[in-house]
Amino acid sequence: MDARRDSEPTPMKNPTTTERKSDRELVVTRTFNGPAHIVFEAWTKPELLKRWWAPKSFGLTMISCEADVRVGGTYRLVFRHDAFPEPMAFFGRYIEVTPHARLVWTNEEGEGGGQVTTVTFEEQGGKTLLVMHDLYPSKEALDAAIASGSTSGTGETFEQLDELLVTLGASVKRS
Amino acid sequence: MYYILNHMVQYTWIGFDASFAALSDATRRGVLEHLGRTDASITDLAEKFHMTLTGMKKHVGVLEQAGLVTTEKVGRVRTCKLGLRRLEEEAAWIERYRQLWDARFDELDKVVEELKRKETVDGRKKRQ
Image 1: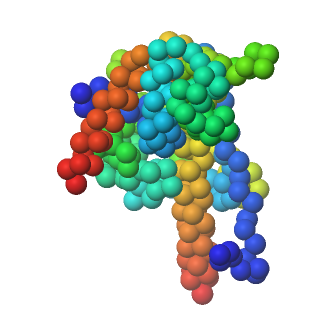
Image 2: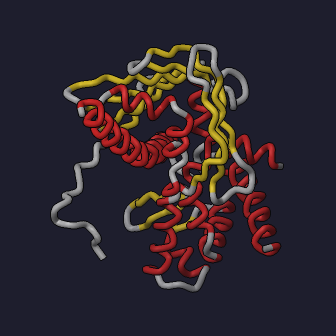
C-alpha cells in the first residue's frame, strides 16, 4: 500500500509546539521550509489561506474566507465541522501588518474582549520560523476558553453534549 | 439551543471527534451515565454491564482518551470517575489545540512548496 517511491524520500516533518507561556498567553511555533515572503503570502492571500485553514484531516470544511490584510482591514473565516450542522465564524480586524515579518489581529467572535493574535515570520537560511502568540485580556478569559473546550466540569458540558446527540440523532433519522 | 452550541463549539469542536467516537457505543454511554451518579471501579463496571474485565478496561480506555473519564489506581483497585483533573484538562486542551495547528500547518507546507516551485519556474522564465 505504500505509494511512495524510493527516489522521493519523505521530507522530515517540522514539529508544531504549543505552550501556555503565562496566565494570559498561548504560543504556537513551527518552522516552514521556505522563505518568509512565501509563508507570509500564504497567510495573507485569502485564496491561499482558505487552502490550509480548515484541514480536511480535522473534519473541517471552509465555507468562505475573506481577509483584507491591511491595518484596519477585517477578516471573516466561516467553516464547518463534520459533526455540526451550524457553521462557525471567526472574525476580527488587522491591527498591524508588516510585510514578510509580522501580523497582528483581534479575535472578535467570542463574548467580551477576545484575545489578540500576533504572528511573526523569521527567516533563517531559507527557512521560516513562525511564532503565533495569543494574548488573552485576562487569566480568567484564557481559563474560560480552556474550560469551555474541556470535557470535565461535567454538569453543563454533558447537558450540552446530550442536546447535541439528540440533534445529531434527529438529523440522522431524517436523512 | 443553536446559540449555546455555536458558542460552545467555537472553542470545543477541537476535541469532539474523540468524544463522538467514545459516545458512539451504548455500553460506553451507560458507563458515563453510571459514573455521573457515582464513582466506580472497573470490576464494578464489568459486573454491572455483564462484561469481562478486559472488555471493560478497553471501553474505559476509550473514554479516558477522549477525556471523558479519569481513572486512579489505589492499591489494587482502579477507580473511574467523570472528567479530568484540572491540570490534565489544560494539558489535554493544549494538546488538541496543537493537533489542530499541526493539521493546518501540514496543509500550509503544501502551499509553501507550491509557491516555491512557482517562484523557481517564474525566476527561470525571467532569466530567459
